[in-house]
Length: 457
Ligand SMILES: C[S@@+](CC[C@H](N)C(=O)[O-])C[C@H]1O[C@@H](n2cnc3c(N)ncnc32)[C@H](O)[C@@H]1O
Image (cartoon, rainbow, N blue to C red; front, side, top):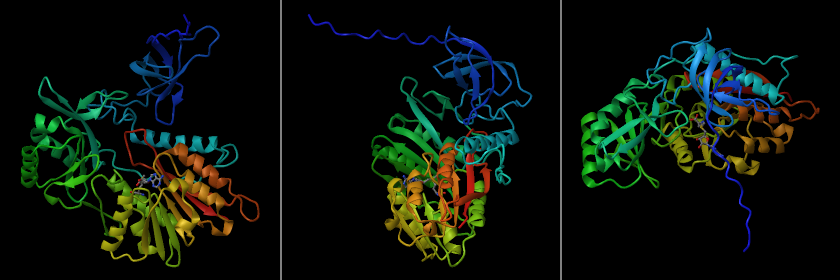
């Protein structure tokens, strides 16, 4: 009989409780520790632990080759503070509230600086980066959009609504959230009795609460709702004056034709959006970020602008008020269409909107070259736009680029690409004229950065 090789099943790694001193924080604000579980001939394992600070001596439980969970702080740092949120211990949301906001901001700037150094954008030994003061947000109640997980507990006939625990699918039920505008959770709490019935709750994926000009609740539905459930939602909507939208795989439906909400731009223009569209979560800081992008780009009435990763036109609309023309490019067709509608609503005839995949965009798709580029990609960054930039002749390249980023690692990679571009004189074509961190997500490790690059030639 044929014999087949059967690999030995690897035993599950046994979880161990270890003690260590934290050596630093990584770019996700996780504590870096070197384990004391040293095996003969092997290097001690580096692990990343949420919730501890540099210098602290901690006890932690290993959960994987490079992960662990904090059990006890044996020697706390002087920088530690009591987390202001009562759900901090369980909720996986705001993972950086055990230090104050100025520490958070310092850490975030340092992460960007280290990544820029790592990617060769600058050499800390001989140069310094032209840091500007960070755009500082209200530390709490800044979110105008929250997404909540839901689970129907069949045995108890009870709906759980809350945030997910860190590194887990468990839900932490919450009645309030310190970083969300008060109206958001209040609206959800009021809707709870209507949702807490098996006919709705068993078909609920998650929900979002949004508040710009008015409160809106978006229910993600996994199966169609019975008529009486729709009726009870419609009754609630009429009573509370809070719009409900239903989102299934294929469509987004406003209940009783609820109207589109809108955000207001720095010039008072209205930016309408559907509740499923991208919206910068921190309204106050968004306004200041858009204003700063305009100040840094300094568009003139003779200049053309490209706004890449345009969403619903957050940057494009105010840029179009100031420039000769703007081309907004967005990958999601619906949002590109919304930008077009927003231009029309605000009587901007110099703004055109293109729905295109920016991973492989070509110069011919964009038409007339632009003097100024605004880039605001999602976390994977803007490699496709960098490829486009590399293919352009120096004289076709933009005079100024403002790059807004929510991921410092891909930002550093892309800025390094821009730095690699040579001018006609074979010297580096761009220099960083300004950069700053933007406090878009206080109490969390997430880092938003703005960089302005100027062309030399
Ligand atoms: C961080 S959001 C910024 C949106 C807008 N600038 C704003 O401030 O509201 C990034 C946008 O890029 C779009 N996007 C992401 N990857 C893309 C790609 N490969 N091609 C085109 N658009 C993309 C997303 O749909 C999203 O609207």
